[in-house]
Length: 403
Image 1: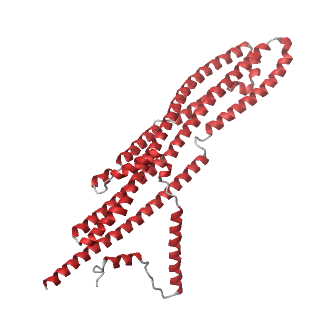
Image 2 (image 1 turned 180 degrees about the vertical axis):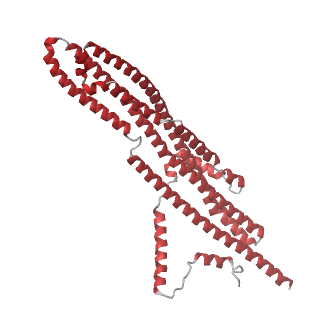
């Protein structure tokens, strides 16, 4: 009896029994045992992996929605399989475009340039005094030097105020962007939830069809021996395979949405850090600079009397030290903040590790889907052989009857 003429039960039994390999040497036997052990370990490890797509994270109302929707699914209609979850996938695509546009419209480099220009203005106003000492310059030309210093301070102050106004506008824009990113983050979570519900509903329907409808059609085809019944069973199996691929596509789309969440937070964190830098500059650096200038002038005016020359000299030395320390500290801190990266390397490392972990999980899911499809192909071949055997059997029976 040929392979195609074997009874369906015999073929099913052969498919269920493990394949036996004959070996000639102990080395080959040891290698085969190692492969089998590795396969068993892989299966056991696969069982330990928790499926993140489950109803445990859904509310009772959402679970009810999934159950009711799964009953409406008709996987025998090609259009149903083609359009299943397409609206949710489109939402993810539109959302990705919106998030990308939000990132493109920001120019954080311009803010960094403004902060650098501000530092230059603050340092330039005291450039001459740093060369020979503030009070030494004042005593050098008396009131003319004070007037010159005030004029230079007024010019620097105008530039500082202009830069500050631009920074405030950028700060408002960044705060709006942070709020928008919060909204986008929530929308992304809704997209993930919607895709999850589509996948769960599809899985329920697919499991129900394979547990009830498909076995019934196969039983009917075996009993009737009609090609149309066998074809009906084969069509339903093919529909199950196509629907399984569709669910896999939805899982990939859901994974894209999951990756979008940490990326949104990363961009939002960048905006927050820059906002904090601007805020620190507006409320700390600039007022401190103004206070130091006003303080220096006020002290000088209060010590113009000749009889207080010695006290002025001592105070001048103290002020020079204090101003130098303050200027050094403010300049170093400003330079350090300006040179600091927008994102810490630890944050990027953590995000990269999460994305790599996500990619590993996606590869595992893809591998599992491939194995399932291979199993389905074997099942299709078995069904086709079963149909061929049945048709040949019918022809043989007819020949016997004619004789």
